[in-house]
Image (cartoon, rainbow, N blue to C red):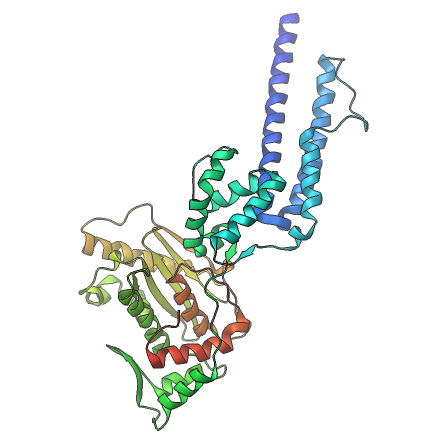
Length: 403
């Protein structure tokens, strides 16, 4: 009987030690994670700390069954160092840092490094490690000075792909500021359109072109004509060809998707007879839904991901499925091998700027496309749409992007 009691005793202790270890691990993880999520997880952390204290007291009570020298769990029981630290985290997160759901930085590595250095002085290496992981560094780096030595290059990596940093970490690194439409631009636009009839061609990138009537759809809050969207995507592609420092972009016409819906890859096989889209970095797919709403899908061949973004929050898994099937067939035709199983699809509609009317979806799609082509974080909003409409008109008429 004594042997059985000892075995039971050891078993109970082993179980409770395991439970306590896992609880502490979770607390530490949450303590660390809060600095990338800020006040968003404050209620969860508060509840978890309360549960942790209750579990600890319960654990002590059960230990007393086997060891009466263990102090009684009462209000005067000294808190553990972990409890103290978690309470400090809660209080600090209720400060001005907790009022910000995101951290905004200028696109300057020094600004980010200064921020992390300050966070390191206050909170140790946890915040520092957070940005390293957000920068797609999968190393299980120890919280030590070694991590500090790796910081600069990792921050540069995060800055180089601020879109991915935004999508993965909810940290927005500001891109090049949106230019303000000025009098000089306005004079250029007026001069380019003077004397033109509505059907006269005002901008052309072979084989696409737009007329004055097409261009006028950028006025006010009108629905943007599809020909304008297609030509703007072609302008993004042209920039990538002219500037070797830019990501290589291939832009498809908005008519690709309905043809894929109707007849699959065979209907558009000849569209890529002079190019191999898998030798580019970004593939743009403007999507016109029901003739009333514009969205964007894009493939990133570097990350092997096909993404969908909708300024009205839609996800459209059917569209992603059709486009992925197209990429699979196209890959077999061009590369003579299957598309890798590591390709994935993802809707990022919940993480992109949203429109606040029913008119600006086309402008959002063009702006999404331009930002994606630079790996830039989406740091624009509905308030920027009137200015962007004018800037896009100016860019199309001069057949050159401003950024």
